[in-house]
Image (spheres, rainbow, N blue to C red):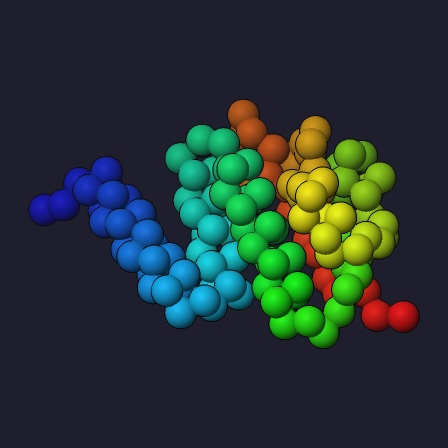
Length: 129
């Protein structure tokens, strides 16, 4: 019988292998998704998800840039905390958003599972004028 810790280690290893494959294929959309899943996983373990949320959002912006369809993004707040609401609706050039690392929002107080760490659910969406 596999322990819960053993199962969680196996899941983490599986996600890391999927991440390697996605990077090899230059599938930035999948890389962003997998980093988000890793953030969720850490949050469930009451560990800070911030690093993986940053990576997920940065890769998402790089994916938009690589596709070359848009040059601006808009931030959409999904959690309702005051720090995130200040960012809601703001528009940035993709390059500026990458440099500034706007998401996750510093000071986000939304709690997904962990009561110790904020889990910013804000996201970037294409801004079309």
